[in-house]
Amino acid sequence: MLYNSIYRADDDLLANIHAYGTPAAQAPVIHIRATENGDTAAVYLTSLERVWATAELAESRT
Image (cartoon, rainbow, N blue to C red; front, top):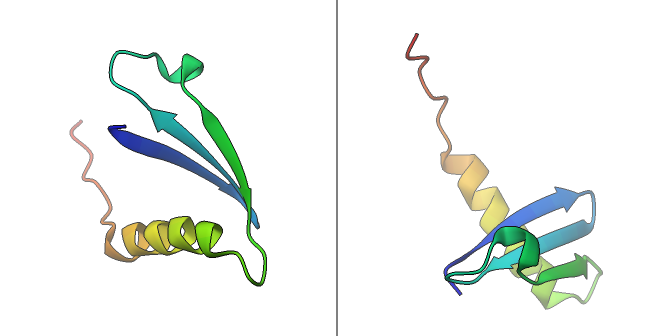
């Protein structure tokens, strides 16, 4: 696995697990639902929150 593309809609997450040499459309996608006791979803949600917390607006190059 190289990296994941993570898509979030409320408490539902889709993680597209990219594999070297495999087009994204053919790579596995895991559906994860956040629950009170769900550690797996919490890992992905924490990761997304870290990215958003450190994200910066890209400057326009036009």
